[in-house]
Image (cartoon, one colour):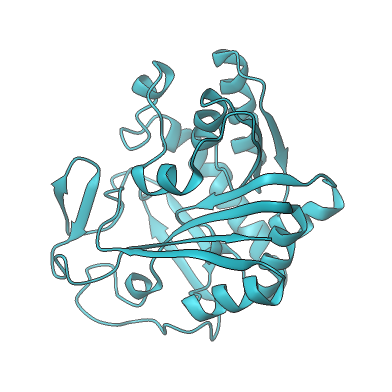
Length: 265
């Protein structure tokens, strides 16, 4: 597998195949979402603030639940994803819900070739940067789309947890971005029992890589948070400690599962 040249194609194929499974899964709870429930969590809602009238770019939006939730809150939103199947579903949902939302199919690194606007807020969250090899290049793209006086809101799973094996019994991967992690998984985080196999190429990025990338590209860190819970039960050995708050049993409340950054120009 030529991961250096083909990681985009490998991951795009995987995410295209996951869309239908995810739309039908309990994890994404489409019934309540279509009835009006937001898909956004307390962490990002607090950092986003009042988005009414704001122009927002949502990077790596999957099939657009968060994108559409932001539109419901009064924002003018553009969602971007690598998966054409995800973008198609997002557009379908926008039409179904009567929301004026634009979706663009593009790799993050290639987005400046197809989009020239700037935005009040650039937003991306949960399981996004691991699909990208270069944080400086990523931050360069982010910075390009944040207008002067605007902000970047970023919420991500903590790199600490990506060091461990799937059962969280031992450290298996480096905290640092040394080489691609090439895997084949059965099932998906949204449906662990799904009878399907998916290939993937990913990277573990240290917080230093992320922060330095932002600083290198004229984005000033305004806020930094770490949380000892995840709003999603997408890992093995999770226990729900409160509504939409999950911890990993072997770690309890002693380990960071999510971190968040707000950066501005």
